[in-house]
Amino acid sequence: MLPRFLLYGCAGWVLEVCFTGTSAAIFQKDAHGTAKTYLWMHPIYGATALGMEFLHDRLRFLPRPIRALAYTAVIFGAEFATGWLLRRALGRCPWDYREQGWSVKGLVRLDYFPFWYGTALAFEPAREALLRITSEALRQTPEFRHAVAEGEVQPLACQGSVEVEAGATGETFQEALKAESQAGKVFPG
Image (cartoon, rainbow, N blue to C red; front, side, top):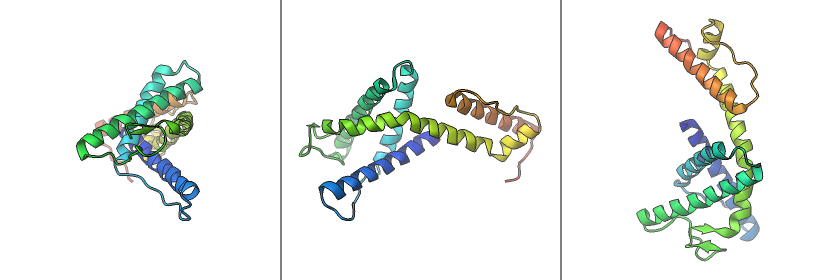
């Protein structure tokens, strides 16, 4: 979970930098496209995306556009809650929308709904790509390849679901590490 949290946080930073830089270039006529984000945003984005993963598992039976509406609500809720907490802890929220758009207590902008909904629609394909990448990364480790070569674990067969594949790869990897640690083997790097 920690690697996904870290990657989601970084992806959120990238999206925010692209959004704020583009907005500055278009609406403020900033020729440099000066972007802005906050250190606080990494854990906020990471935790919010993990919350959306949790929600995905419960709403899987619904059509994707409906799930995206639920994700958008999670995004707005996380933005409001974390903004409120930061305002209480620091005396102010790093983002302040009081003078802009349709804001709710200066913490969220309801006119950002189309942008957050677009992000919510992109969440599931991004999540699937992340699962594929991490599954493939596990398969490329020397420990995994060695355990398969030694017959201690079975190589993964093609499976229909990315989530099942990622989970099965992780379990196979863990089995390989456990078998190797019990045997006292050390792998060359």
